[in-house]
Amino acid sequence: MKQATMKLSPLALGITVGLICGGAIFLVGVVALAAPGYGGVLLSGLASIYPGYENAGTFGDLLVGTLYTTFDGFFGGLVLAWLYNLVATVVHREAGVR
Image 1: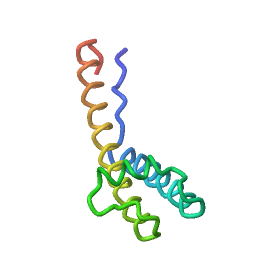
Image 2: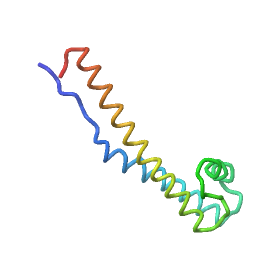
Image 3: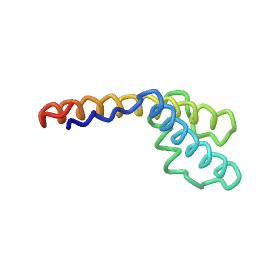
Image 4: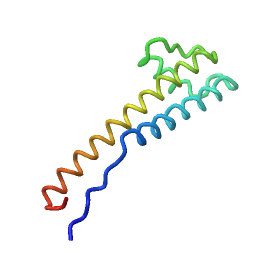
């Protein structure tokens, strides 16, 4: 009996990873607004990657960083699901499973 290859939904994984990444950065940023210096290395690292994000300690800047990481997480999830589906198809084909 042949088993079907399990497929991931790229859209669902993209949305999930995007929400997790954006939510994590938003949470770190909110805590940093209340306790300056918290997550400074992480937020400064993001500032070195994303144009327009300054890590200035303002709510507007926090929203920019959150949007960047949400989109990055979304597209990362899409690519991860696509790559998983590709590899799973090839592996199952090689093993004689469809």
